[in-house]
Structure formats: structure tokens, C-alpha cells
Image 1 (cartoon, helix red, strand yellow):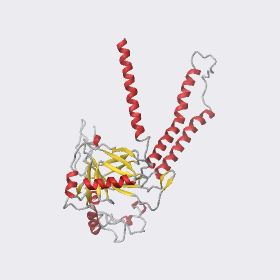
Image 2 (image 1 turned 180 degrees about the vertical axis):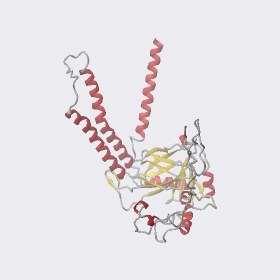
Image 3 (image 1 turned 120 degrees about the horizontal axis):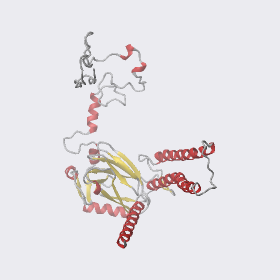
Image 4 (image 1 turned 90 degrees about the horizontal axis):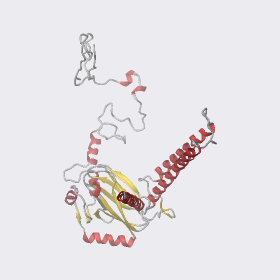
Length: 390
């Protein structure tokens, strides 16, 4: 018995320590932001949780109150087996959740527009406005298997799995991926955003205090996903300038061959510095034409526009759509569906199926003399046959 109690106590202590570890990790990241965008996101979590607790806490309390008040031993409790309806009670039950849903909806709409990742920042912090003379620092982010490449176009350098930013300076991230969809996640700075091959996404953020933080991939992407993390450092301007000089002095050039080697899948990749970067490398990654001889997506679309149908000055033309029924209407013209047109206006198209002879039997129906369940395999180009029984 004594051993059983000791084991139970040990299990409880381990459970509490695990819970404390999880809570401390959560506090370090989401609940302890270092940037204004992450701070506003944390406030939304607090407000949403508080609004939901307005329902959860009273309901949990009333469960205890009702269970105690209407217990079998309380003879003073009102017993009304004919109770059917109470207008006042219905108003309370339905109005409170409705008001909370309205508040949550308004909060979601407001935060969705205010914290749109494509929207440039309108402040550095709650007490510090944007300086119009300070240009945002541009960082080009490339998701590889399984590592992060950060290109600093202004400084003409790049790093792998290390991101250093000056505090109180707006940052614009341009993001893409080389192979599969992934998620760039910097919880202490600006939340997360998805990245995909052949697409460019944008994220704005800012760090308001110095420190060392962690970023990661938040979308499962294969064997090396769990180690696809990067270091995020917030430094002052002098520290940032010194770090740039360090990268320039220790790094190697990042050219096409170096990138193609870096692009190969690898796990637990250490921090790597590149002292120089080809000017158009990020654009070629985004257009999927880093490898020599590969046509860029922009070139393909340009050829599509030259060969496709449509009107020369139509901004919607050039998607490779052939001329004819699928040609976009002229700019400014109304698009009218066939349902609103007369028979002559709809026009005719090629007849794909041959008309049947008037006396031909419908071969999809089972013969009349079948006395068992029959199954007919569908014929290519026709509708599947029906199952029938005699």
C-alpha cells in the first residue's frame, strides 16, 4: 500500500512538472511577445478567452448551485413537474450567448483587417508611431527542405537558420518555397504565414525589445520537419551593423551552384553565412527557374499572353486561354451568362456524342428476361449502367 501511494505521488509530481513546462514554454512564445504585432495577437487571445469564460464560468457555477439546491434532501426546494416555459429564462439563455457571438464576430472582423499580414504597419508600438523617413527592412525568406534561407537584399548577404533584426524598425518579409507548402512561424514577432512554391507571400512585423527567440516551421513537411527551426535575435542598430560585418567577413558567395547544393534535403542544418548573393536569386526561386535552362514562370506567362486569345488591351487576357467561347470579354464589358441569353445568342458547339437511331434500345436498361441481379460495367464515354432486377 505504501509503495502504491508513493507511486501515485510521483506520478502527480511528474504531471505537474510537465504542465508547468508546457505553460512556461507557452509563456516564452505566444504569451510573452517581443513585437507589437504579436502583442496585439496575444491581446486577441486574452479577449476571446475572457468573452468565452463569461459563459463557461457561470454555467459551471450554476451546475453546482442547482445540484446543491435541488438535492433530494432539500425539502424546501420548489418541485414543479408541470413546468413548461419561462420567457425571462429563455431571454437570459439565448441573449447572453448571442451578445458574446456578436462581440467575437466584431473582434474577428476588426483584427483580421488590422493585422492583415500584407498590410504595412501603422505603428512601431502602442506609444511609438511609424517614422515615415525610416524605410522597412526587407527580408526575403525561402523555405527549403528542411531549413530556412534569409536573404538581406539591402546588405547583399544571406543566412541559413539565423535571423537578426534591429529593434523598433519595421520589417517586410517576402516569402516563398522551393518544394512544398510550409508555414513561417515567428510567435514572438508576427505570428505565422503560409509559403508555397511558385507563389510569393508577404508578412509585416517589428521587434520592440532585444533578446534571443525561436522561429519554426508550423506545417508538417516531411522527415526533417521537427528540426526546421531558426534563431531570431533582436539587437540594436549598432549590434545589427556589427553582425552584418561578421557575416560579410565569414560567409561565402551564394550563387546558383551554391543554392542548388543548399536546396538538397538535409536535416539539423547549422547556421550558415553567405557574404554575397546574386541580385535576382529570390526572383528566380519564386519563378522556379534557378536551374540553368529552366524557363521562368513570368516568361511562360508572357509567351502565353502573346499566343493566347482575348483582346490586346484587356488586363485579364494572357492566361493562355484560346480564342473563341472562352475568350474574356473586352475591358469594361458586362459578362452575361448563357442562362440570360436567347437560343440564337447562345450559339452552338461541337457535337461530341453521336445521335442514336430512333428505334435503338437503351442499352443501359437490363433485358426484360433477366431473372437475376445483373451488374453492367460502364463503357468509356457513356454514363455508368444502372443496376436492375427483374
